[in-house]
Image (cartoon, rainbow, N blue to C red; front, side, top):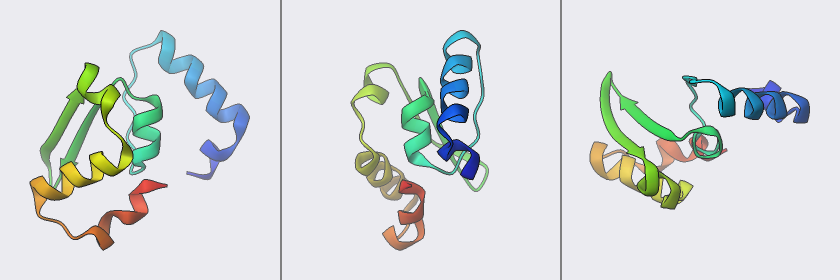
Length: 84
């Protein structure tokens, strides 16, 4: 989403997610890691990963992609775009 590249928009989102319970739907693993306290990944309508707490805090984008691919047996090329 181009709007999230705007600094003011990012700052407003950061303020909102700190004070409200929010659900953010994104295809960007970077946004999920930056803004989420819990990450639930879906694939074909099913929960593939559910990370929170220390487990979520310790995971990197590369590790998140590796976990997702391993669980779903997906090739890297299909998911590389999600790293932005």
